[in-house]
Structure formats: structure tokens, C-alpha cells
Image 1: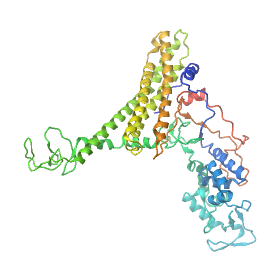
Image 2: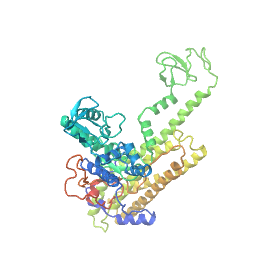
Image 3: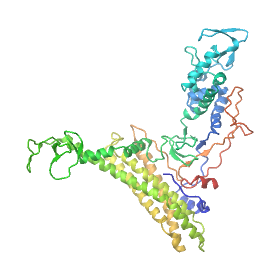
Image 4: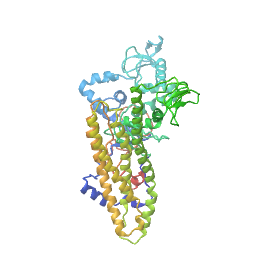
Length: 571
């Protein structure tokens, strides 16, 4: 359910003066451009650049070669801030030792033994010339054949990122340039695989970088600069939750949304219906539904049983008794179980029906774009003082955004005020008070969203100028109101509901008036030259005369409520 709107006409990118002015005056909404994008799109071309940014920071601070900087970053999952915090807390020797980096930096790495001397390899127990043996940073020296076989095994096992020395109890990480040199002589394709694994470790091992979950895959990754609990939009147009990689579902937490999708997908509610409306046959155990008034029912297998208690009986009966059977004793547990299943089913149906209704409305309202295009085109052709109709666009985007908030607020309420997740967090009295508070805000938002939808569906192309001005003001005012109500609902959820939890933590993506931020692409021509003669040659991504510093971010320009990429780029 992507927020979408056509971009064929130029009128969809103006009139921010009227809308912005009202919002700043009436609701205190800050419509100033943000300081800079908080998310970046990493393409195949810019992946090396993104990796080199972090490598350069660590190399400058610790005066390391690229190989050792990468080893430290992979050990700390590419979290530079965490790496620096460990450096301050434990010191450089402990930092290096934990990551498998030799403490002494000036030793001759990956060196060949003297060609005039011979070396005894402790692995194969053969004596080889110095030119056929290699000494690692840790000081251990083995023959090239053993080193190569060791590297091949580790690469095939998927351990390319941290190949340790062969020596017993040595935790040092082998120099990647040495690995590449030795492996490429016998297995060039495996050396390319090794390089690819090193490069992709920036995404696979980095909690702030994740692949876009688009299908088919667009090949992009997304890097967030601040909070991992956010919703992002890739350059391919897909909007998703960065934390769980499912569709954007705020104000639902990731756990709530996962439980809700499973509940809607599997047969759990079918089982509940069967529990409420059927009884199992005591012989074949198939569910049987009663279609008459008599409490003596018969299964298709031929077994007769009592509907009241489910016990097998004979077929002879009177108005008051069944032959050979009596079930006048009250069984409390069985009655409670049936009543509980019935109550849970009705509760689920309440929330699911409203969730489905807003989902259907969202899909239908997406079709408004074509209708509104025609209406605006007809209105622009008229001889009128009204020439700017971008309030239609802003109103539609606000409708999309508010409808989505409403849509996902019902799964949130289902779990927030149920007993599945927060049974021990709140007493029944506190739960009831909080539920009334939330539902009041939900109801206000729902009423104004429906009003906004109604005004946008008005045939304003057939009205006179005065009536169009009235609709325009209504759409603008309702856009401001719905935005304010969305913000208040998120504040209530974050502060009064989720913020007061003691036994668990549920994080949601924050609300943004202008919708889900579209990630900006990381320029692939940024040069991150590394002054290491043995740095790996990953290709020509950083060739050229580009500046070695990260370019200043351009001023962020986000139009109201997930404006399509084409419109943003054009404007």
C-alpha cells in the first residue's frame, strides 16, 4: 500500500504558501526543511565509498592500515562509536587483542622468509625455501601451500571476514592482501568471492545498514544515520520498516505487527469459530455444527451424541431425556472455555473489520488521483482567478498519511489493550482508562479523516468560484487538523501507553508530518583514498579526481506526505 499520486501535471508542486501558513499559525507545525537526510541509499557503485568512510575514520584515529581497521570494524559490527568507546574504556592493547589485531604495528606483514634460508612448516612438516613460505603479522610462518589450503577452506565455509592464523591458540586475523594474493594464484574465482564477502560485510554485519526488502530485489541497501527504529523509503519507491523489514506499520511496534499478520494469515480465528459454533464428535472427533433444535445430534460417521455435554449416547430419546445418558451436572471449565473463545473471536472481529475497512478505503482513495487530475484540468481551463490547485494535492497526501495511521492503529489497540502482551503490565482499571483515552483520540482522527475524504471527492470542477474557495479552505483546515491529531495520538502512544511499560520495550517509528523520508543516494564518486600500498583493488569505484572529504549534504526537500520520487526530483 504505497502512498502514490501521479506527477504528470505541474500543479502538484506549488501552493505551499497557503497550506504552510495556516499550519504554522493554527497548529504550530514546523514546516521548515530538515537539516539533512537521515537515511542514505547505498547502491552497488557507492558501497565501497560508504565502507571507506568508516575505514578512514578508524585509520585516522588509530593510525592503522586498512586491513587492521577493517578487522576492528567487523569485530564491532561496523559501529565506529562503539569501537571508539571501547578504545577509551579499555585502551588500545585490549581493543586490538579482542579483535585479533596484532598489537605491534611495525612488524613486516605478510613477508616472505629469506630466500637463501629454508623454513620448516609445522603444518605439513616439510622443509621449503623461504620464497615459498609466508610470515603473518602475528609472527607465525608456514608454507604457501598450507596457507592457501587453509584460506580456501575458510572461504568456502563462509568465514572470509575473519580468517584466523593456523597456529595453535593464535587469534590473530590473517592479512587480507596476503589471503587474496595466495588464493588468486590457484583459485581466481574464489579470490573474487573473498573480496565480495569483505565488501558486503559492511551491510551484513552492520545494524545500521540493511538490504532493501523489495521483490525483485533492487540491489540497494539503506543506511540510517541516527535511530534504527524508523520507516524509510528506498530510491526504488518501496517504503518499509527499517527494524523488521516488513511494510511500514507505525504506530504498531514490530512485535505487534508480526503477531497481527500471523493472526490474519493463519487459521487461528477459524479455529476460534469452530470452538464457538461446533462440538467434536466423540467417535471420529470431527467438528459437528447443530442445525436443529434437538440436543441429540448425529455425526456423519453415525455416532449420536449429546450437544449439551458432547458425550456419546443412544438414539432413543424423549423431550427431556436421552436414553442411557444424563448431563445435568454443571462443568464450569468447559463453559468458561467456550465463553472465552467466543469473546476473543468477537473482539478480534471488531478490530479486524475496522482495519479492513480503512485498508479498503485507502485502496479506493488511491484511485482519486486520476479523478482529481481531470477535475483540476477542467478547473484550470475556466476563466477564473483561481489558478493554483495544489491544495488538492496536499489534501490528498494528508488523507493518505492519516488513513495509514488509522489503519495501523487498530492492530495496535488490539494488542495494547488485550491480555496477550500486557496482561501483567496494567490492572483492569488502568487498562480501561487508557483504552478510553486512546479511543477518544482515534475517534476524533477518524471523523476528520472521513470529512477530508468527503471534501476531496466533491465535484469542485462543476462549482462556482465561491463554492470552490469554501472547499479549498475546508481541505486546508482539515489537513491541518488531521496532522495535529496524528501527532497527539503518537504522543499518547509513546508517552502514556508504551512509555509506561515496565516488563517490555516496544519501539515505534516516530511520526513525521511530511511522511516517510525518502533516502538520498550516496554519491559513488566520493574518493576515499587510503594510503595503504596493499589495499585491495575492488574496482574503479574511487578512481577520478573527486574530493576525499564527504560532500556537504544538500538541503533536504521533502514534499508533503510521500510525494512520488519523480515529483521530488523534478522540483
